[in-house]
Length: 476
Image 1 (cartoon, rainbow, N blue to C red):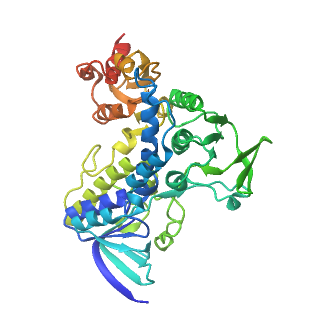
Image 2 (cartoon, helix red, strand yellow):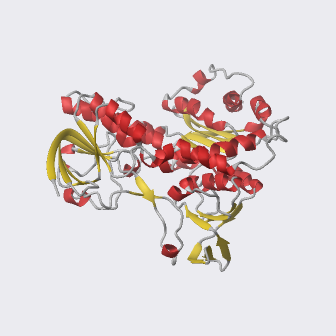
Image 3 (cartoon, rainbow, N blue to C red):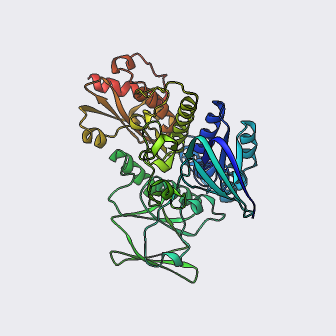
């Protein structure tokens, strides 16, 4: 075994999109930078989440929309070509190869070390490579942890005998299971139910709560539930798994209410946990398995001298790829500023703080119907003590919706902060609403006064005319 020592200005652990962006921004600031990764460059999003899941979902949603367009219904009435969809998914996941990512990293002059990296005291990272070599890295200025999360699976008796799916298997499976049971009612659960049902699976959802997408406005979960059931998904609420077994290739699922279900595969979509168990955080006084708490410049709190940063899902602020990349841009800039002794702008919406994490986080759920939201929900706003006005409008009454599809069903909600006269949150649920979310994000992040929004005229006839209808409803 060989052991070497290297010194860099910045060390990044984790080469998903978040880690890559931190490294690129630090390098752009003139800092020597190395990134450590033990799996594929591009991480969860590129290979087991965003890219492959949306590749599975795009044909599903496109077909569902087309079936409601006059003149197209008969043309798209047949089943999806599952083989073609899976082949497209493989292409979008780059066939689980990361050469393009490596080329990009080289183009921005960031060094790469493949292997398992962990903290080994202040400003030190040890890496064990696949060849058994050990490399010790020292950071002059900062270490940034961008190790993300993994699927959190409950301790169900018999779980270890059934080879259960997590989100990774659900997005990379090479064949369509005849019967798929999905445990959970969040984003991964509803998206994978949408995809696999349309590809030919008989899907049953086992949801502990009494509704889907519980962190969003209630109407969003209701509309998605209706859409799933109409497509043929068996959605069961207030249902939990008591035990599991695999017999003769089938998953035997005993339910807590005494019921029984048989499936070919079972997917647990029951949340995420941070990748900090084997990160060496105990060498700097932190607890393995915990989320890494940070301030708004992404310095990990409780670590002396401010050299450790945590960016992306591992800090538990907003578990979304686009939000993690936003954090990475902020963190890379602030690391560069501090390294060069430049002033740090940590005022609200400043160059070196992630204010949007608190006030303007956009999200899209790619089901049929889609759900798009940004900012606070009604529940959040009331809990935070804001004085708000809730403005609702039926999306199906907008002219653009009539053009989009026959029988269009949807709902929109805008929350108005009565003290500030601005938009505090927006939620859209309906076919084709994903592309509305950025306009809402601009309104929320920009704190655009409601009176000024009245002068932002939406084009006719588009679904974006919902903005005018919401404002008209507000004005009475």
